[in-house]
Every structure is written in C-alpha cells, then in structure tokens.
Amino acid sequence: MIEMEINVLVIGSGAREHAICKSIRKSSIKNKIFCFASNYNPGIAKICHDISIGNINDKKNVLEYALKNNIEIAIIGPENPLEVGITDLLDLNNILVVGPKKNLAQLETSKIFTRNLLIKYNINGCPKYKAFNKINGLEEYLKELGNEFVVKYDGLAGGKGVKVSGEHLKSHDETLEYCKNIINKNGEFIIEEKLYGEEFSLMSFSDGKKLKHMPIVQDHKRAYEGDLGPNTGGMGSYSCENHTLPFLSESDVIEAKKINNQILIALKNEFNDFYKGILYGGFMLTKNGIKVIEYNARFGDPEVMNVLQILKSDFLEICLAICNQNLDDVEVEFENLATVCKYAVPNGYPDNPVKGQKIEISQLKNKKNLYFGSLDQINDELIEAGSRTVAYVGVGKSLSEAEKLAEKSISSIQGPLFHRKDIGTQELILKKVNKIKSLKL
Ligand code: AMP
Ligand code: GLY
Image (spheres, protein in one colour):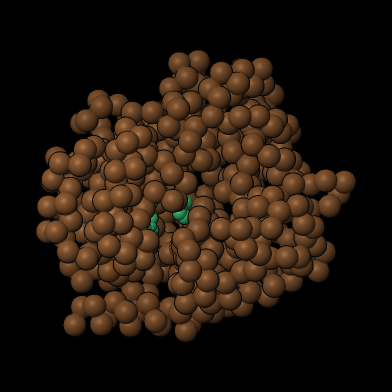
C-alpha cells in the first residue's frame, strides 16, 4: 500500500510559525512542509522541505507558490494575510485553509466590527464604547468618561493602535489632537472605558460549527520587569498544569469559554459562513467580571508556544478536522504540565532595537524547546533582525519548575539581548492574585 503524503504550507516566519512547523513535523500523518516566509528563519528552514522568501501579503504570489507545490492545506500564522483575503483565494483554488476568510477575519481586523457584534448578539463582556469617524460628539463623550478612557484605531496597527489615558494620552486636548489626525486620514476609531484587572488569552480551535478550547495562557505585553515600560508584541507567557490561571475562578473560565462559543454562533449568523481557524479571545478579569479586550483571528505569539508544546494530540489531524468540519471527531488533549515561555529581545527593543548583531546559542544544551523569531542566518551565524529574537519554553510539573528551566535556558543565550526574569515567578504570580483580590474588595 502506498502511504499518502500531504504537502502543507505554513505562511509566516516568526517563532509562532516555527512552533507550528515543529508540531506538524510531529504528526503521524506523512507530510512535507513548505513555508512562504518574509525572512529566512533558520529554525523553520531546518524543518521545511522548502522555504520561499517573499511578500506574504501578496495573494497571487502565495497562490502561485501553493499551486506549484501541490499544497493540500495551508496554515496562516499572522493576521495581515488574513486581512487581504488569502484564505478566500486559496479556498477558491480548492486548497484547505486554517485561517478565516476576509469577512470573518474582521473579528481581528476591525475593532468596531467586533464591539458591534458583541452588542448585536447580546454577548457579555463588552466595555462601554462609541465608534467615531468624525469629530462630532467626541468631546462630549470624552467628558462623559472623564480620565478613564482608551482610544483604539480601527484597523491592524501591529500592537500600536491602542492609546490608554494617563499613559499614552495625558489630556483631552492631546486626545482630540490624536483623534483628529486619524480622521484627517479618513480613519475610524473607538473610544471606550478604561478597564483595570488582569488579562488572559483563551484560544480555541474552530471548525465553524464547534470549538475545542486550549489551555488558558497569560502573556506579558510590557517590555520591562514588574509589567512596566512600553507595550511589545509579548515578552513571554505562562500556563498552568490545570490549564487555568491562578487568579481565575471556575466560573470565570466557563464565562470566557461561553463568550468564545457565542462569538462563533454570531459570526455564522452574520455571514452565513463558517469560521475555520483559531479563535483567540483576549479577556480581562475586572472587578465587574470578564471583559472582552480584543479578538484575534490567529494563534497568539508567544501563547502558541505554551499550548503547542504540551499538545498530546496530532496537530495536523486537528488542522485537517478544522477544514473538514469534523473537529468533534478528533481528540484534542493537552498534557497536565505547566509551561513558561520567555523571549530574548534585542537591546533597545521595542523602540530602538539593535539590529545586525550576532547571537550565540551554543551554551544551550537542550535546544528542543527553543524557537527562532526575528533572526537571520548569515554565513552560519545567527544575526538579530530587530524584533523578538528567540523564545524558550520551560515545561514542568509545576509553574516554578517550568520557570526555572525557561530562565536558565534563555539566560544562556549570548548577545546584545535582554529578557524578563520575572515572567512565571511565584513573586509576580502572587502580585497578580493579590491585585484581583483587592479589586474585588
Ligand atoms: P488590543 O490591541 O485591543 O489588544 O489592546 C492592546 C492592549 O491595550 C491590551 O493588551 C491592553 O493592555 C490595553 N487595552 C486595550 N483595551 C483596554 C481597555 N478598555 N482598558 C484598559 N486597557 C486596554
Ligand atoms: N500575544 C498577543 C498576540 O499575539 O496578539
């Protein structure tokens, strides 16, 4: 009997896509991995049958590459290809895709769309908000919210589209100026109430009819220890052996899962189409319960590394089930282990990162849980490319065991890099638990 081999296309080339490639490689389904990448990630290159560097947002180029290589299934890593409708085009050409079509991906690409969806379908967790595309009523709404507001640009902005009062915007005048700038460029935005609490991510596999949830993960957006400094793509993340977080109650978890499920139904009703891919709910636990901060239409980075590292089931089988809408029939199980993921980033990141400098990983003995991010390989040397460079995932029976492993490993990487030592430590976790306790008093 001839065993079938399937050709899998991964779009994107950061640490998230390295994690996706590693999981595909572990599959019991015989496969060949192809990667359409924006840079030459040496980790991915080592695993892939072929890696092609190009513009991952250029639909025609991606399609051409997919057809040339007889791709059966494509897995889309980042959000921009979803926004330009790569899924729609691949789907028209009978290629299976893990990643929603353009209209469904508005869940991530338009904050106004998602806020309106929550209201229209009566889903809990929507903060008080108003959408604007002109100046009318803006000053009045700011007055109503006082000093507790957030401005969100309505579109993808690489994590830079959210301005928080008191931090990024110091006065109403400054805010009006900022908003006028958006309006002058024909942009839209949301003003919403500022929330206080702890954020967490609940990602779910979705075949459009059914969700299967992953362990809950907490990311750390701030660059410096103690959750201080500028926002980043995420400096590191952790998950616990029981798949929830120390500051969440059982009913909080039920509520977050319910919101993801309701979103799926709302999307089906809205578009009469199925959302096939990863549904990522970004939540905040506040004194008034769970609030929705945002939705993403893809795996989180770094969160994906926490969950795929402990996925017991066959990832490629899950991907095929997402596309063939039989997620209910496949096993989606995770090990009861804790994980801590820490990123090493270039000195000066995120505002003025060093670039082009060499890093050295030879001191790290076990490279199994190492993920390459923004890196180039030039003459066998690893060179920093300016964004999050490498990540390491510590896995253990307890959070403290996982944290120690992650810390030791990421510290052994040499070069002009830094990382957050506090992620996953008992001290920081306790702070988060106490913060929630004091909010609820
Ligand atoms: P987003 O792009 O919507 O995920 O927002 C980026 C970051 O801005 C979030 O991770 C939060 O830390 C912060 N943020 C977003 N919305 C709010 C809000 N309503 N209140 C307080 N912080 C927020
Ligand atoms: N870790 C946050 C994100 O992927 O958007």
